[in-house]
Length: 194
Image (cartoon, rainbow, N blue to C red):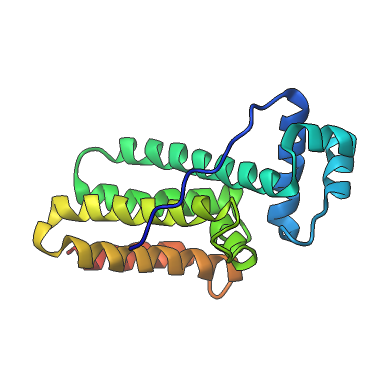
């Protein structure tokens, strides 16, 4: 599998940095990372470019903070859904799809921010790359843990199938391929677990 990339450096958030991050997050998600420059971010945040660079140092660091923040918020959101699902592993698997559907409706009408970012950041040397791949590895590990509680002998295979259903649904949702792709993937996950 190769070596694990180190965790990217993170910054301490000041009020101005929070405004920059909020503006950048909205703009990056709506328009794409490469399409948004620091001039637009600083104007939308109501800060000078000097303040932006004083807080973040580079646009790359803003991208790191944007993706890390979304990842942290997603994990907390998912944890709430998993807790509400109770201890039954099958219900917890389905809760992942329920959480993704709720998250997509509220925060991700244009699809998964990590998948969208990976389209623009394919270079493993980019400081945000470990966040993107780290989230997807974490999701696979979560599905593997849940599948091992259901059928340990087929956990790896089941987890990979669940991951493919999940990620495919996120992409289909973002592209608007067909209505309610995540609910369809949930039903396929239910059938797989049966």
